[in-house]
Every structure is written in structure tokens, then in C-alpha cells.
Image (cartoon, rainbow, N blue to C red; front, side, top):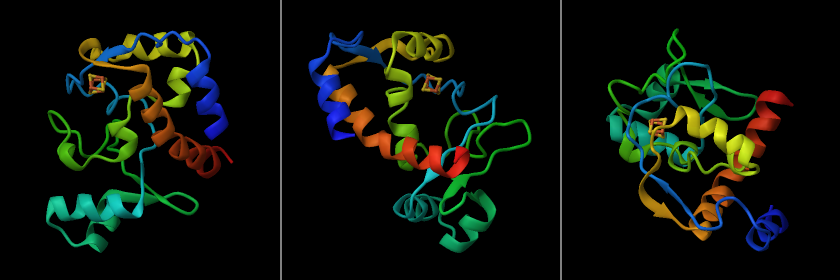
Length: 154
Ligand code: SF4
């Protein structure tokens, strides 16, 4: 990933001048089509502490097992179980949610980005993320992308 990030730093990209983004908490990315939200060990502890329920109870009620890790359950309609008029665990939401929409799979081409911009009304609003800040999000979330490719598609 380091070499990929290095090449993204030096090559021209559609986000060279930065991109404005501010989550409107509309829920479009947390509802609808099924998705997989990965949580690591630290996040499991943080969210269960935030919810003030024992970690084991939280895992049984709110998570499901991937091959070697865990993901947050969805309701029957496909929404994240924590989405109730906004994210109920927003202050401790997983890194995967924190780094949206600046994921590698969204940023690798303008075509992919335009697809995300259609569903996310926060894009183009609010805080201007520099290219460096966007690359940081890509770098931070890329390991999750790799895990999910292995755990879900592999
Ligand atoms: S779709 Fe965009 S604005 Fe809506 S909740 Fe997700 S990140 Fe926020």
C-alpha cells in the first residue's frame, strides 16, 4: 500500500485541489443495499463501552462473524442496526465509517467517485479536505478494504 499511496501523492488526481465534505447524517450510506461494516477488537470495546453493555453481550447481539473477524449486523431492510435517525454510535463509529467517502475503492477513479457523489449529499459541502488529508483516509481505510476482500470475497 505504501508504494500505491506514494504514487497517488505524485500522480495527478481529480482530488488534487481537495474536496469538500461534511456528513449530513442522511443515512444514505448506512441504509438500503446491504454492505459489510468491519469492526476491529478495539472498536468492539469502544462501542460496547459507549453503549454501556458488556462486550460479550454486544458481540452476540450486534455483530456477526466473518471468516476471522466481525461485522455489524444489519436490519432486515438492509440498514445498519445502529442507524436510528442518524448514527446511534456516531462518536465511536468504526474507522470504516469515519473514513467514508475517502476510501481507495471510491478514490481510485473519477468514475467511481461520481458514483459515490450521486448517493452522498455531504460531498461538495463543508470542510475542504486537502489531497494529503484524503490520502490519509485512503491509507487508514485501505487495510479494511483488504480484509473485506479476503473475508467476504475470498
Ligand atoms: S451518505 Fe454522506 S451525508 Fe449521508 S450519512 Fe452517509 S456520509 Fe453522511
